[in-house]
Image 1 (cartoon, rainbow, N blue to C red):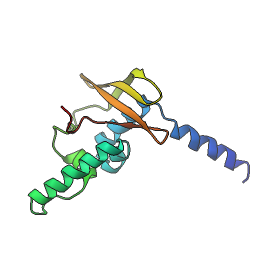
Image 2 (image 1 turned 30 degrees about the vertical axis):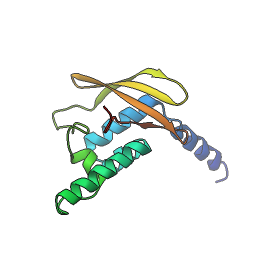
Image 3 (image 1 turned 180 degrees about the vertical axis):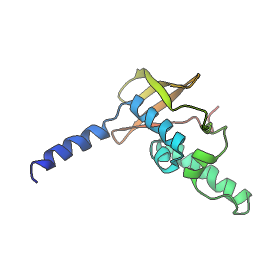
Length: 136
């Protein structure tokens, strides 16, 4: 059993060092599957905070009929925040690294017939998607 510990530590360390392209693919896969909790966990802290603000505002404006849940919002919410995938839309074909340094990265994601770019930031040693919510 002691021999398994080093192997588990290596696997954990490698999973924490995901590439920006891996994170982009994981995010799109989570959206495709409707897993808002996973999708939200891959977002930067400022993006998560902004989504929480939007979810609270939607909840308050709806008189409580809309849940105050950013994880639901990211997969079922306003398409201006992030377009919801449809059954006809395929999973990510590929993600290409456009640029990166030790703090920021830009990835081009190819989904079906469309491409879009995503910004990522490194937080706590992990890459996180930084959506342009509320930015001009």
